[in-house]
Each structure stands twice: as C-alpha cells, then as structure tokens.
Amino acid sequence: MNSSASRRNFLRLSALTTGILSLSHIKVWANTEGKKPVVVSTWNNTLANTAAWNILSSQGYALDAVEQGARVPEGNPKETSVGYGGLPDRDGKVTLDACIMDEKSNCGSVAFVQGYKHPISIARAVMEKTPHVMLAGKGAEQFAAAQGFKKENLLTKESEKAWKEWLKKSEYKPYHNPGQHDTIGMLALDLQGRLSGACTTSGMAYKMHGRVGDSPIIGAGLYVDGEIGAATATGVGEEMIRIAGSHTIVELMRQGRSPQEACEEAVKRVIRKRGEAKAKELNVAFLALDIHGNIGAYSTTDTFIYTLSTPDQLHVVIRSGSYFK
Image 1 (spheres, one colour):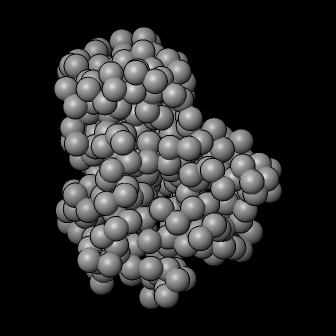
Image 2 (image 1 turned 30 degrees about the vertical axis):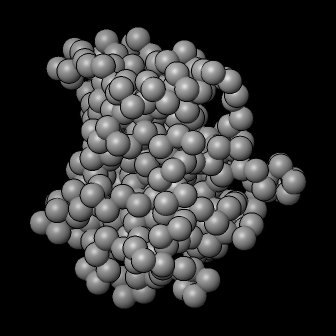
C-alpha cells in the first residue's frame, strides 16, 4: 500500500479520536452570522490552514492567504500527492499542476511542470506578469526559471521506492485507488470580503506521462466569482473536467442554491453521467464557500474530509457528507 493510501486509512480509523466531525450529525456547517475571515481546504490540512489564517487574521488579502497555504503541502516531502515528494508518473517523473484565482476573475495556471517545488507561486506569476492564463510543460519551466524560481529534484527516496515497488506489477487502476487523488484545494474569504482560491497537485500516482487532470483548469478544479462564491475539487480529475465541476457549483449558487446544495448537485451530476455502478468506484469531492462565509462539501464516497478555519472554529477537520455511504 502506498503512503498516501495508508494516510487515508489512518484517517478513517482515527476519525473519532482526532476531532473529525461527522456530517451525519451536522449536515453542513454554516457561517450564518457572516463572520470573516474564513479559510477551507481539502483533506486534513491544518498546517496549510494555519499559514493562510496567519495572513487572514492580520487583515491580509485572501489571494496571499491561499498561495501561502498551498505552499505548505507543496514543500512537505511527506505529502505524496503534492509538490516535493509527490508520487511520480509511470515513467518516474514528478509532474505538477496548479492554478490560482482572485475575486476579480484574474487567474493563472501551470500544467505538467517538472523540477519546481511551488507551482502555485509560478501560477500566480503567470497571472500577474503575463497576458496569459495557462503555461504548460517546458514553456512553464522556462518562465519559472526567468522569474527566479529554483530548479530542484522533487523525487524523494521514499516516493522513488514506492514507484519501483509499483513497477513490479505496473497495475494502473486510477478508478480503484482513491488514496492517490489528494489534490489540495483551498478557498478563502478575507476581512474585506474578497474571495480567492488555489489548487495544487502532483496528480494521479503512476499516471501516463503527460497526463493533466482538473487541478490547473479554471472552472474544473477551481473557480472563483467575487460576487457569488468559490469552489474547488479533489479526486479523479477527469470527472471534474467532464462537468466543469467548480464552475458548475458557482453557477448553481448564482441561481440560489446554497454551497451545500450546489456541491451535492455537482456530485449527483457526475453519478448520472457515469452511472451508479461505475460512480461507486470514483473518488470525486467538491468544496464550496460563498461570499457570506457559508460552506458546502460533498463527495461520492465517505472518505472525504476538509479543514475549516473561522474565528469560532479554528482548524477543525470535518468529514463530508457523501452519496455512497
């Protein structure tokens, strides 16, 4: 079993002792009093939330918060699905994807980047220093070098060992390995009411070389509308791309759905398109935040958790509701 899958199993077993709340008792936490700031991130990312919260609680900008929050798992070699230490593709290459977006629809993205630890910061540089939204592959790497980002080897000994063990059988079953899809998505609302989001990943473990999922795609892995809300996704990226999942959620909120209702509808849309039999094998989860600070989260399976930070609930890990129990 790879280390990412082991981490997921540990979280399941220790749910009652680590402060994880069950949404069977709380359908969804809602910041009904409109308190700010708020930051939410996919999975158990208390350290990332802490970095973001330090900025938000000092009256900082949500965009700075999500960038700095995303950099934490990117730089952690123990996080085998993000940045440094990410599990490689089937050719042994660590390839990274990321995007970032602010409340004014300014956005930047990089895909298929190798040798740079913090793709989220490169994505922000694309947003702020180029006329483009997305750079990919060698072009993104050339841009990163020109911007002064340091090139380094991202394949740790632990991830290389796991890859070599996988090579013995070379079984690629992306729909059967939910523990390998641990994209970090983060959404923040600052004291001035500005929304921003970030999404970063090393993608599916042992994927085909060149594969890009939803994480760098604006509207699929992340979408932010400063008038309405924001959404991000984690899991099998191909499914988020098929329904433009994060954009779908924000548009549903625009039409009057709550963040929770919008997340549930997006998951059900995936299931309707794929069929229940196949959908049971999928790991698809969405997280949403509206401009009032209300939160929504929903997934296909019962494995998804997220981390919430507000003035009243600081760095709390919550288990999402799910379609399949």
